[in-house]
Image 1: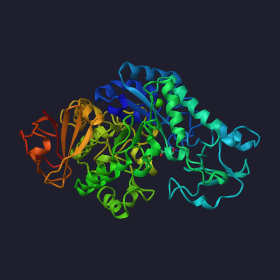
Image 2: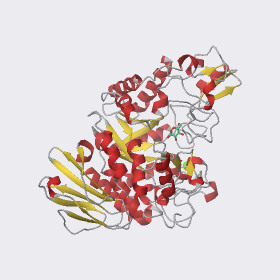
Image 3: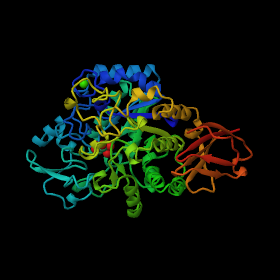
Image 4: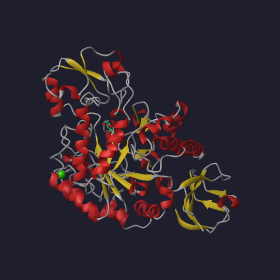
Length: 535
Ligand code: GLC
Ligand code: CA
């Protein structure tokens, strides 16, 4: 059950550390940085796609599921990474991008050219352009259609995402076998988790003859069972931004996906942060309900995509935009914000720290994103979501220690803004400073690891007299942790009625600073937080 209490760190090999000086991050560079990850205290590393790819969607357009992109290194180096992580007790998770391939994948190349090929039916074709071709785009405003004409095939093919990403035909049993085989292969190389990219679309049927077929959620169970036989600790983490009433399709009875990213909490959480009021978060946690015992939430703040606010009402979304991404250029696809956390919070690192503490205290497992632990900025001059995918900043200097290549040779420019350039924001300076965000994040990770109540226990929302303060308890096997978070930029003193704590005494565990002892009246700094164990 390791996944119930994991701290997952997500990175893209391409932008983390360049080991051979060609300007592109690689496995060699990552291998040299494992001490850093171990020191941070993470328990699981999630690598974004590193497979051979034309790289038109940051690697989410796969050309070969069994290889390593030569720009990033070799399969041998991958196996070495897998081994080294194992030695350090860190699990390895990778992306499984199986909803679609790249149009450069040999399956698509062969299938489109040759109607007799077994690969023809790996994809979804239509001789005429379907009526709904201008609907259901994943990237509205950038993508024009979900059906595109293919000259070689003389037919249209379906693509939920960019047109260079033809969807695989999940209705074809051979495609399912391929997907399981890919999982088995990486499991044999030491991978214990897969992030299931675009999970809802993976199991949906498309195209004329299947248009009204219900998605096949049972495929998740097949994947689950297959992986369990290969690896006892194997887990599936679904990327599924779906409403509450659809969750059981993904979790099943605990026999489908083990984990789901919690988009349901993420969006109200940002509304709560924007309003500096706990209510939206409290409201959504109340509705969330229980999930099967063998399942878990994965809480996150920001990922490698836009901050998707698509499930909020129009008015609420505008409120978050106004607070954290007011310029149209900071917004994307009409639904999200393409900024990093620190700039969204106006560079206020207290707020970055408090937001992390908050997700660390929510029932589930935590996922953090490289660079957020040092408060990295974003580059809005880069296209779409690339704004938040700039090279990791290790040391001062123009390339931030990411690479020994010239700044102009880098895969993506290092942040150059006055506020966030490597001279201001880097690992090296922060490691030596106990007050830095990085040191505080290290302590928060250690704190979370010492509180299994959060991952295993039940959550009890705690009423206070301050609307800006979010307070809750996590209880498990007679143990309990109380956490208070001040979402406001002003100091607060929150009162908690002693009966709520069941006659137990709160003993300080951690906080943004040292506070005077308290049993009922809890002082909190602006964006302050406190964790207490009840004894
Ligand atoms: C997921 C990924 C995103 C990618 C898309 C298509 O949403 O998070 O980065 O573009 O799938 O694979
Ligand atoms: Ca390199």
